[in-house]
Image (cartoon, rainbow, N blue to C red):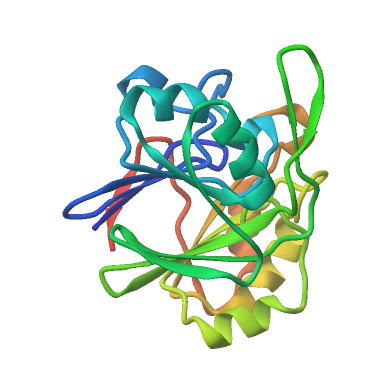
Length: 226
């Protein structure tokens, strides 16, 4: 399995049979290396409804008949826009042919801003535990630090964790470093930083704060084998 990072919170997972995109914010993302019309995922996983996470989901999913798996209210809204969706909720898990998805808590907000500046409520924000080919990947979405991260790590040993470090809207480097202690992943990758001025951070600061755990700082387009 190949895992790649593409700026902000965009993650791509390539298995033997499927391509999975998480939070595909491409158009308007100054840090990404991707071009939306070139992406052909089988599945799109969404953590919450903010536009910098839903991103190009509608265009990509319609062009490729991709399945969109998202928190229920967001899935219902996207379904009404003509997308093929599967709604889930916090604590729920489902085994699909491309892997197992489980939604976890995330402490944040969640709404989608339309082109006419209407705000659509899109349910509770979430993190995602994605298990495939014997590996578990945790994408925390946008969240603050919370104590149940320890329970998540204990119940679901994590191979790779993607954690936000941008501060202002999510955890900053200090809280994210503590989250690593609670989650105890084999590898942590910082995300959701430097895209916009309010979330400018030095990932090396985060890495220095993390003790006794491996941290990998990834450039957009960088790939590693898991």
